[in-house]
Length: 180
Image 1 (cartoon, rainbow, N blue to C red):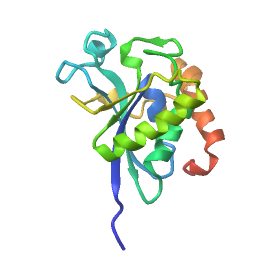
Image 2: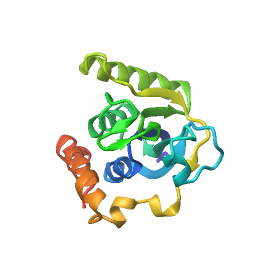
Image 3: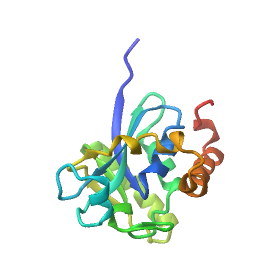
Image 4: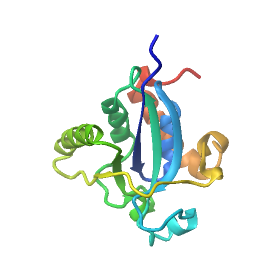
């Protein structure tokens, strides 16, 4: 029996708590980590990133078993659970750190990302603003950000913003939801 082939892509879709909460429930995902990438400051803190001055995006690194879920499927979920047409914003979260982005690790990932984004852009009549760039200057977010929704489901932001995104994922991709 061959060992699983694990691939990893980094995604920015607004607040990382939302994106992380969804991917932690996806069949075939092996790890999800909140972090920051594609900014100018080395090892930024949450406060620095929130200032909007570092150039970083809030992101999640998503690792997945390619025998169970494809990169295309990972990206299809991504485009359902965030709005790829709002520049530097998701809902009330505004700033460059909340931009929509796919941060690839190799040319094969880039090709799939650009193909899926072109389909999404056509669906949204040319309004998609998602950037597709090589991942650069990644920093893992502070420990208290990891598994945030799982640890704080009744916190106000989680109940009002994160939970509806998780429910949207569950309804749209029922066959991909991990059993409870």
